[in-house]
Image 1 (cartoon, rainbow, N blue to C red):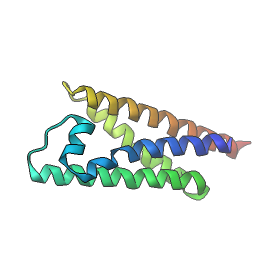
Image 2 (cartoon, one colour):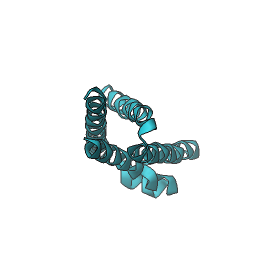
Image 3 (tube, rainbow, N blue to C red):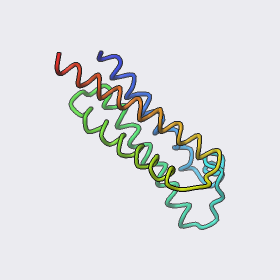
Image 4 (cartoon, helix red, strand yellow):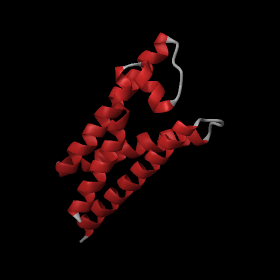
Length: 125
């Protein structure tokens, strides 16, 4: 059961780390999201977003090997992914790259829910 928890946290962590390349500039953000960012303020915000997702991803991976913080990491990952999913689904006309992000977040949510379930099952048994 512990191997499932660890694997699911690592997968969710890697999914959250994938946007890291966006921190390196506008061209990387274009390739990730197919959005043109001409406003330097928006560029700063999007690059910072990439760093924050990387920190969350690293925290999820760390939690895979540090049981005492797993619940907090799972909750953080679920809040992040479900919030993005809700924002995307309540907005119309997003592009194909954003659809890929939605699918990635659905996978992350599934991994985090499996991780939470295996963690709970290991506590009740």
